[in-house]
Length: 99
Image (cartoon, rainbow, N blue to C red; front, top):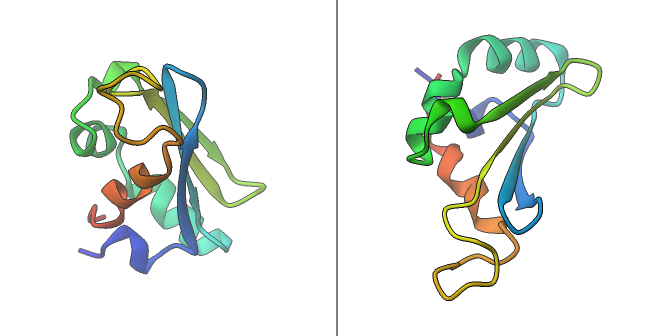
């Protein structure tokens, strides 16, 4: 098994509004995209973020060699429970996922 960060160019997470986060996985080339898009299961992402798989939206964008996930934020942006207002640290969660 290989860690996701060993296969891709970059993993980026960002705020997608007060209730959602987006995680972009930039694969860099078609072979890496194929390996990530077929090897990384939405259930793995759900487990990594401790959320229900049915709430995750997945987009495999072959033209850009990008796999994108949108998921509910664990806390509403800007509330006292929110520890990452910009959503930037969530990319780290996927870095050690194995495929």
